[in-house]
Amino acid sequence: MNYKETTEWMFRQLPMYQLQGASAYKKDLTNTLLLANHLGNPERRLKAIHIAGTNGKGSTSSMLASILQEAGYKTGLYTSPHLKDFRERIKINGQDISEAFVVDFVARNKVFFEQESLSFFEMTVGLAFDYFVQEGVDIAIIETGMGGRLDSTNIITPLLSVITNIGMDHTQFLGDTLQAIAGEKAGIIKPGIPVVIGEYTAETRPVFEQKAVETGSDIYFAFDRNWPEYDSVLKGDYQKKNRATVLQSIDVLKGVLQVDEADIQRGLLNVVANTGLRGRWEQIHENPTVIADTAHNSHGLKPVLEQVIAQPYKTLRFVLGVVNDKKLDEILPLFPKNAMYYFTRPDVPRGLDAQILADDAKKYGLEGKIFSDVNVAYEAALQDAEADDFIYVGGSTFVVAEIL
Image (cartoon, rainbow, N blue to C red; front, side):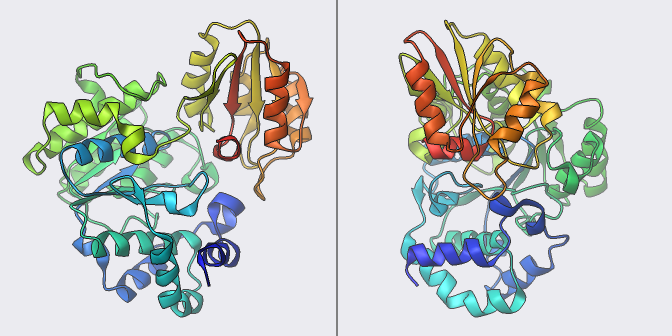
């Protein structure tokens, strides 16, 4: 199989959360451990930083990777989902894994994958760990897919665990209280390994503290300290919180990794160039200003929409689409009524029909037009807009992916 056929096989044959949702979720790590053993346990040979959290994982992972690259470390970065190409998930020093490596890895292990009915995510984690070890990375930044305790990435023993924040998302898998979700994310805290906590609440802090006591882990709360302000290419207001988490993480690791002030400054300024991070308060057009952002749950959307409303504009326009497992009654009330909406459906199997989204939005006073295609919706918004309007594209990672 060539690269296109290989990735299509991976997407088609096996449950993939990005496309299918619930059916892709595995209840334990049995398959991942089988795969790791089959591959010669590459996870035991990795120096890693492990990152979980409801929101901000991608930004936090990318900022850390960028800083470590500036400090001269050969840095692996594993994130999900991808926007355009599967290879975005697995990078070294900002370069995507080669098509040839993906094709060869699947060809060598396909019989095993099929015998053990491995999921898309399990295979991808195995691929990432195998690639990072074969390429001799100095450090790997590993982002969880969902949750933590049962996530396929959770077979590593990292130098540091990081939990960015806790919000209500994926409640059908992780629990429907902040404490329950925090408990799942806290599953990445390992015996004797320090942990950094970003944003916390009165409900979640005790969960993390209790777990750290059980594992004998030093625990650091990034928001309990004042950190210096650094300029960054990432202009979303929410990035201030992610930066605090990153700075606390670098501080905890200073006995293990050599990172100086200049590395931090350059890393934060060059994060997009160094890692290829996209879709985080990203300006994709001017006159009118268009911002695309992948925020897709109430915890992530709230600060983004506050920043949108604070912008100067004549008319505010939203190109909005979501997937079908989002709780619309939690996100739609966050959107402003005095705006024009272009309701659309992301082109993935679990994309929510634009008519259903529009009907629900109407209950919250949000009015607009309906489009079956994201790009047609975006073009219509641009067509309607004057130079001093403001257009926001989002609601789902997959809506942003189609525009970029």
